[in-house]
Length: 280
Image (cartoon, rainbow, N blue to C red):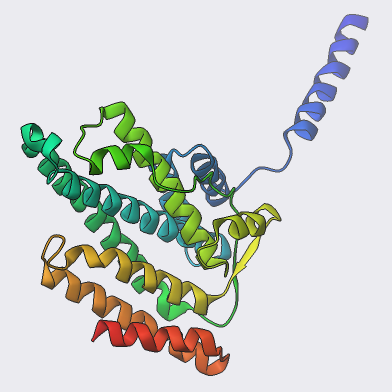
């Protein structure tokens, strides 16, 4: 009898302890976003994209979904930028004497990375197009661990540009470094720090960062134009793709001007006018 009484007291206490220790559960959207942040922190960008997609589908237009969408477009833009850099490295390297015996392999890598850059750029631009009409004057808060970044020229990229072949392990490692550096730059720009990754790092280290929607449109449009330059005659020579980039950017800038009419900023307005001229 005493044994049964003891057990009857122990089981409820155990359940109470488990309930207290588990803490509040996260919604599916919160879990996806948490996992995405983990992927970004560890540079597992494919996993991060998958979880950001999950967060967007789960949360929709809620603040959590908005944050996931913002992080996703920043990451896609960064990955496109990194792909373009590697494509250009192989394009330069194939012209160097050491690459003559591997010209076919160099050209294949050039084409592959240009393809990656194009696909990710189109994805990023579509994401902005889908959401730009919903932007208001309200800031968009995001919170993420700022990526580790390196300054200067990547040694493996320098090697490729000189016509030397990079082993797969070295190439993949260089690609990850370029991805991180590009993400650091775009996050810094979105936070209002320009291209100063050190300043951007300081801003994100303090916690949530409020992204100005005007800056969001201007900085992403600037990145789209820079990456889209790969379609000019010196790159892939695809004028139809370049026209698409210009059309998307013009649409972004139209929305930016509407926001600037409500909340003026001379520097941003000047940048918008310059980019509009670049798109003509």
